[in-house]
Length: 318
Length: 320
Image (cartoon, rainbow over all chains, first blue to last red; front, top):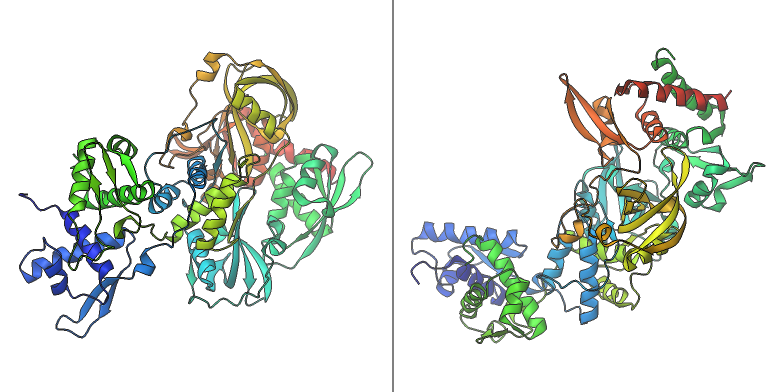
């Protein structure tokens, strides 16, 4: 072969690093892996490029101090590289493939995962088209995989939420009503809290593995709270909202029957909400146009009126 | 040949082929090549190159044992380059979320194989760390059955944007969940085109006979399903039953709200940056404007300028 194939060198390098029972120096690597240039600098440069390629491909290449002339050695820990065999049967593999084909995450990460598990390439399509599901995930939600990994490794996470620093032992991630939430124990408040992932500022900081002090038996689903007016940090206020018959069933479906404090004569309902974010509540109420009305307390009622009057005065001549 | 791919992409592909092949044991060259988008000769060249790889002391795990005959290729499970690899957090999340999401679709796991796969995944990725909930509106099953059997449906449909209910004959073509709601893209005989309907606003649905082959062949905008890479989005805008374009001006602090609307796009008019949205009806635009706040300005059409103040007056009447 006139031109040595770099893929062959990289493949050999991967095999050598995986097979090494102790970290290998670059000199030892070059003795085993054919294709590295002879000169010291050129060899170092070529190796660094190959190492970067492997790391970019997700291979955990470790750099370790060794007791030798070159001082650093390299290896790949097989336990960090391989997944224990999941033992997936053919029908289970096919089901996962359907899931990955039918769920849109914005990036082909599900497909990449299947490839690593030995389910790469094209899968023949069978049967009737399945419904498709759009899950906004990777685009614009960089915090999500960080939180997922923190849960997996039992690490406390720190993040800024609406300008406030939070320290949270995350328990689970939930998707509901078009949004992603993380549920966990807020350390400062010593209370279960729910956070909307798209409202987290920047990337969460992940603590050491096992630093989470989540109590055994923490009930994620009991702690999961998704109502937008709970996401503020203001004092909790009980707000009663009257909803007309035309929108009553939608509201009861959304809030659950326990929120209903009164059934009105015309078929409408009065619901009671615990609100910590009045702006979010006003936005929610205005979405019903004139089919809903804040009854009490007066302060919240006045805030709705003020917002509406601003529209009337901005409207110019009628 | 694979000259167009860089080394990293070739390594990725080689590992993908070997990991898959190890599970199959043996597969015809043509099938492997088609599966991984290679010509048969390019595939054989890559595999023969890989079969030569290996470094001293050539432990048994390392030897690739790739066998390439005239028409078939095989390798062995347990070989170093052919074993399943750990997933990155993004990949693990993506796979678990995809499986959870499909499982949340009513009727999608009739034989339970997805649940079993997920149980095995959970052991590796963490139990219960992620759950996906999707709505199950009443008419979902009816719409899905009609789509699968190529039938027309007579529906009553509540259009929230105009606050009216009407009767329509539709042919469901694509069913999907997005932003917490189920939608169906369907040929609408009233509109004479593909329109998007929210399934939870379909009041009643009954069979109305087989669909016409022309309607079933009508192309859909941005058919995400055809894209096996997992890219693509269902958010591509399909107009609602009756829609118009409206241009509005807002401050930058409220732009995030418009960015959540699939149809919204930025346009320039007389040197001003404006947002253009497709509006299905007055009530929808009223809701949007009220949420955007009193500083919003409707630029065109002029007759829509009175909408938000009128809606505000109407709501205020309840408070007086």
